[in-house]
Image (cartoon, rainbow, N blue to C red; front, side, top):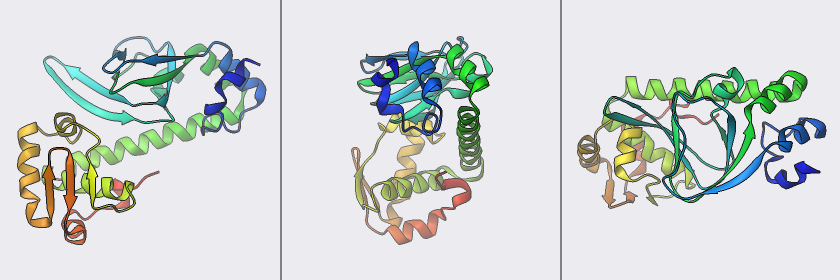
Length: 231
């Protein structure tokens, strides 16, 4: 069966509970492609012809206006993007490019919409995924609007530590220019924010960060599940 080529995504929440026939219908027109670093996969304003699923590597979602550009999110394996445009048959609101060598599964959007109409389990999975995206976007907006740049950076570093099982020394996932964009600040403001966090035990050397007093940093940052919690 065609679907046997894509067993690695069968356990993804979008596909886990759908029928074998529905998965076969999605897999029939799908294919996997390897992309080199810094390849633009989609451009905002273009038609959403495919649902993209990151199998390995990572993809930066970004937007631009006039001469300005900002990072919106980074997609890691195994995750789909941009689902809303696919379901609504609307143009992409974001662009996407690979950060490193990346392997992508592409599923024709028309097939996704057809199975959405015919398979109730797939429809429920789509709604759940879109609800998670919506809640994540609200949390991100709250982070940007309610916190200072120093607070945003502090909470980001706490997230990084927790992701590494509370490790106090870790490498930044983003280069600093991209991290500044993601946190809604300029590279110069990011540098000032790192310096401002030194009294809270934050030491940075290139991409390496050391948190010398995590409890003190948490007391300053005041992380909350209503902004920082994972769904």
